[in-house]
Length: 294
Image (cartoon, rainbow, N blue to C red; front, side, top):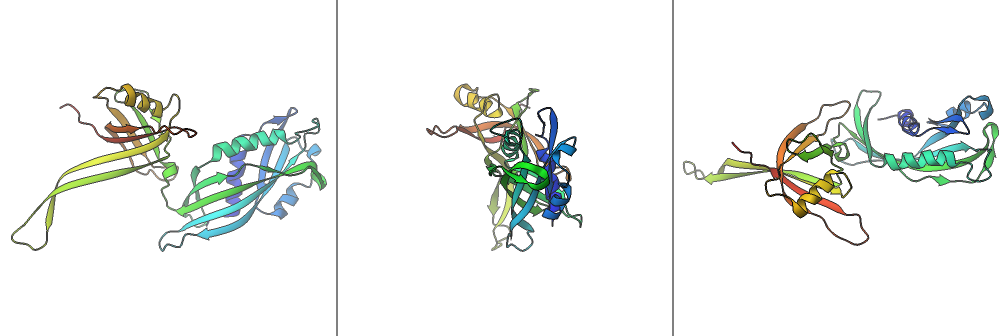
């Protein structure tokens, strides 16, 4: 299974994408997997460091295996406690510089997917989500000095050699156009349907079927956004031409595995946009393989 240290390293790397400066001095995050490591790293005061270190420690709350034989899948809940040194040049909002980075991190990380390898070279796919920060009360914390504690709830789902729907990459564009829009996939499905002819062969009591045709249907549900694949479909729904053909590509590979990929010329047999007051608009489109001229 993936070690807490590897999870802490992932969070450190993702957090530091949003690190910046406060009062002209760089700051960055450093997440530890236990309190002993945290204490060893915070022996120096922040005034002695060229870069402000915002230290945190990762605590495991619960680990729940999915009880299915042959499926190595775990739901893991953690608490991330971060100690933010105060911006001494401000009277209020003295942790605002770190909160701005943390909120950007939380917004970007929702539904984030990736893969990690454990010490036995087993590859686990994961889905990661993080709660919004809970801000504590300013206090004095030993060598760190005046600081504000902030905590976040971390949720991981690990699955051995799993393929996660969040990791599926789909692109959609008008056929023969160089512009291809990434599909923000909320939900959907892929169905391969085969039809056949069942005949009585040599008086056999067992029905035997010969497949004579097959068809592929791909359904995608996405949020309605500006300058997006969803807007292109919305326009097609309202004023589209009868013979509009799209190019739809699918890829579920990642950094470790090539996965499965394919590209199709498709037509949108049905496009739906529910209009419900108070809710974000969504676009639902059902695609089928388009007939191409011979």
